[in-house]
Amino acid sequence: LTSNEYLVLAGTLHGIHAITARLSPTGSSSGAEVIEGETFKMTIKLTPTAELMLGKVYEAYADAVMKNPFQTPEMPIRSEGFDTKINSIFGVA
Image 1: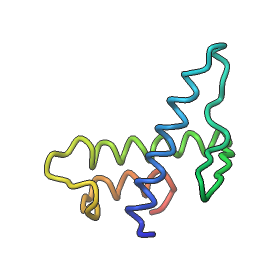
Image 2: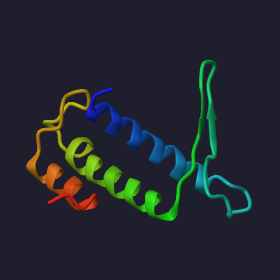
Image 3: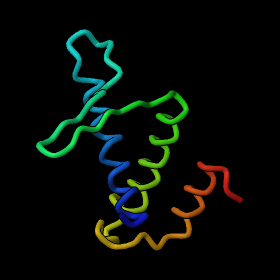
Image 4: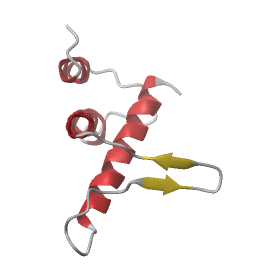
């Protein structure tokens, strides 16, 4: 997978996790823990730090791609602002 495909998957996973956390009838769900398909099974193990970082990556992705009418989701992200945000999230100078 390319780096952009990883970002799309991370954003999708975060969205699914956030939605499932709010769908609990008891209101105390931490979100999806397992996603299964015909050919795969994915177990989601998020620490509070990882969840926070994933949320920030998703927010940066949404700002750079989803809110930008000139950006096509399948194309590489060519945005200095996006690169700066991602580098600051992961502590890269």
